[in-house]
Length: 597
Image (cartoon, rainbow, N blue to C red; front, side, top):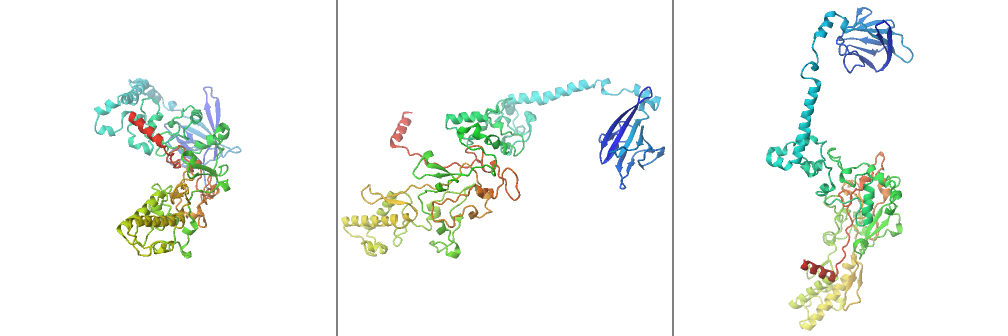
């Protein structure tokens, strides 16, 4: 409804001045209350005196259910608004006019009975009455200064004194007061993050110097394992960090991004501009980094780069970064033999052989989640393989097994076993090796010492040769015979099993356990351990949207997979690099240096 209201004011000469006002509302409330659309500031008008609204017959009415209303000299509770009517509401007179175009109701309003003119006695009483605080000692100015002083003492002087004399204050007010609200708590701008709630009453934990902003040292005292955005391993990296994170004047302060007192979960920034403000134009602003511009998972995210361990290498040379775009280079050279198709043979196909008969294996038999549920524990021979792949070498005579480790230890264990058998004259069941010209089944070793030594050497070499070149070790490892030394010995190719293919990202497997493993890792037909089954970017896009929300898809912003800080809990887990061996001369120098100190 659109109401045209014409205010009529009469001057001393009897001339009228008109001011028009348009009020728009479904129902127009008239009264002294501040919530009224048509406000009449007079004590003779009710708070909600009358209401103008549209009736069910599309006509406009005025109702005064709780007040007095005179319509053309008659007391009414409700009336239709008709042109020419005169309506009296307290001291105000309304006139109904024909409504012009685009206007539903047109009214004039005039104050016809001013308060001072009703009776002379009332005017005289108002002049004699002493009203307002200005006529007393409780003037506005006096009260203002009084309350300003109270506020200054309670919220400035006392908190400042407490902040400066904190130690003295705490020692002199021991007891329950330590757990109460401290004076400088009045400056608290809001609730702390849940991680800081345990020391929230002790402001000095973070605000170590009064009236000085929180320093990085205060943050790093607790967050010692949180690294920078990228490693500061070189002077160029340090200079780049200063150029990127000090350009806004924050000088690389932690508190520039992590602003506390903003709520329970507001300390960690997870908004999209945290990443895209820099990475959308990183190739132009910092071309030396060599990272492409990235703004959205769906539009311009490059293919994943896999980090593979290189056998025999140490330090940073042990990691090879291969883009999934390079199909020819996606081969894992782990030096292990592991056919997934054999181990994942389904039950209907007979499964795989085990000491307890044939059984169907699942991915979870070998890939066990770690304590956090995000990644998997390393697969080991003892915990995952040895149950089926036994290291026994004389199962008919003993349950003794060779150690899973160095070749020299394997040879020493076998030699020790047969030497002990020769000394004790213990019969050895050699039914499986009669074709090699060894002792007959159940026969005792020769009694002569020289013959015993030859017998031990012959037996040990035959067993180790068979383990290294025909069964047991040969089943899983790449083994070659070492011809550079006297006697039979072998070399086992160094193992490099990659555990963290995408170390710079975060993938919580426990949040994806509603899916079958083969949805992302289809290895049921893989016959070679060199096959890589890490899902590519398109696989992720099938379930995750980009920056924009999509139906039936989970969010896929930068923060979904990447953390800001290197080494932080949300930034993934770095690759465990093989350590560089220390030379004997270096060990001697180190020991001498310690002795000198």
